[in-house]
Image 1 (cartoon, one colour):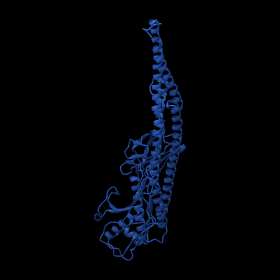
Image 2 (cartoon, rainbow, N blue to C red):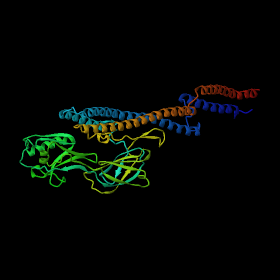
Image 3 (cartoon, rainbow, N blue to C red):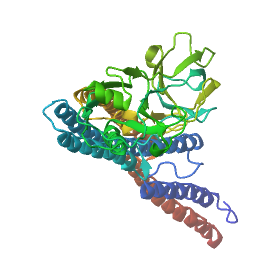
Image 4 (spheres, helix red, strand yellow):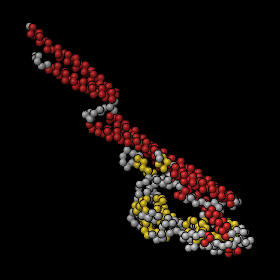
Length: 476
């Protein structure tokens, strides 16, 4: 029996220290609610749990992103809904104008409202926004870059791949124009000469007693309503001259293309002779002409190009469509090859997942009156009104197609949101099983360790009492 070293007490103390450490760890888990509170608890589990925590937070943010994307689409769709309503009113007015019971004053009122509605479409296009980002002005469609500033792509469908597309403008669109035999003089309109001029079925009355300046001014004022310019020119329209100079008067349609013409009707021969017009004379403009260059990554051999005035539409299989506008005022005939590069940049990207590449691209084309083809609607004759109805119907179809695409985007984002919620729930459950404390199990463990601690304390007391028994030997 030894008194210098009490191995029993040391053994009990060691066990108490271990138990005390376990109690401290158990209390830490119970108070924090986490099973892993330091890398020493479970090094591999901690590494996995940190990665899962990052993924859960990413999924949670992606869910919010998806809702933001839905809000963007709903904001854009609200603007499109108003544009649809405006197009409906414009069509109603066009149908009204197609009825020949309307007087010129009635048509003035109809045209004024049509012009106001066109301005409102443009206003909606410029003001519909989300978080200070315009949605309908073309900022959210793919960017293009042309080697010729005067030839620009105004629309590319989603099926158009990134790349360089080459074409050659071989002829520019022209306007319909007529050089009359009418020029300045001191004569006045006689009773025999008085009558009516019809330009594209639009009536202009020439009354007895009018001076030639009055006739010129009347023609200018009235034909401007149907976008026909009346001006004097000594060089066939290249430059304008003062009417008093005696230069010949010309009629010229403001619009380009083979569908834009001038049809002249004169009510009597005397008036026709006075103004140098031929009754029944008809002329039309010409469309732009272009050829496509077939290259790898560019236009394919099956692509076709259709021209209407200054506008070119290139179509191909699988929904490929590219609209190109050539500026006839500045582009010279036969400019050679033009290259248009299409980029992926420009669309709004919605991050819909926790990792790079989990995204949806929102491509919203420009929705102004020009893009919809309703920027030049004329209501002054039955024929013009009928053409306006066709143009509005095409615009309604275009807006409907875009709204349908927006609906598809919204449905997709809602599906993404639902999927993210399921993923987040599943991964959170796995993360919880890995890192969260099982309170019932841990409380059982704590109780066990607490009992062991009390037992260890009791044994230390007993082991410290044993050396005192040696006193009995010393006393004896």
